[in-house]
Length: 143
Ligand code: CMP
Image 1 (cartoon, protein in one colour):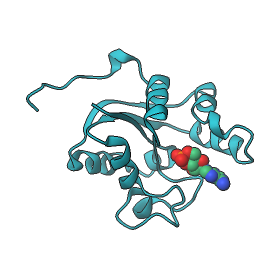
Image 2: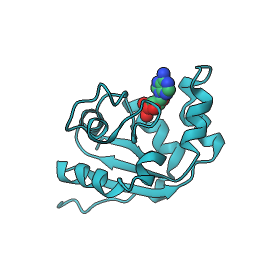
Image 3: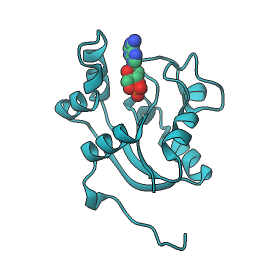
């Protein structure tokens, strides 16, 4: 089953949006198989955002994502990466459509509430960066 890494960013946690965001993915029929509230170590944040290293906003990005707790999650389901990306909406909240998470709750490019893996390759990398295999659960096959 396809898996993805989703993370409520510090702005979303502080605005008490964890429940609202989790409810959206649950109602869609996706399965939560791992979750933790954590403050990301700077080194992990630099690895997570490795592709943005050298960009002018890199330091701000790392400072922001390590500034307070995040809610890191692993979800699974058929086509979960594409479906969750659609539900999250465009990176820039001003371009994200109403009905998407960023369209409904995001206000700034730098504080856009939630992160979602953008490909199978980044999902694998991000899940491995944040979760150990034993932190992920298996559901009963009848579900
Ligand atoms: P996300 O796609 O989750 O991960 C990379 C983040 O970098 C992105 O969300 C934005 O929050 C942020 N970002 C992307 N482009 C810019 C930019 N030009 N200025 C500031 N932040 C940016």
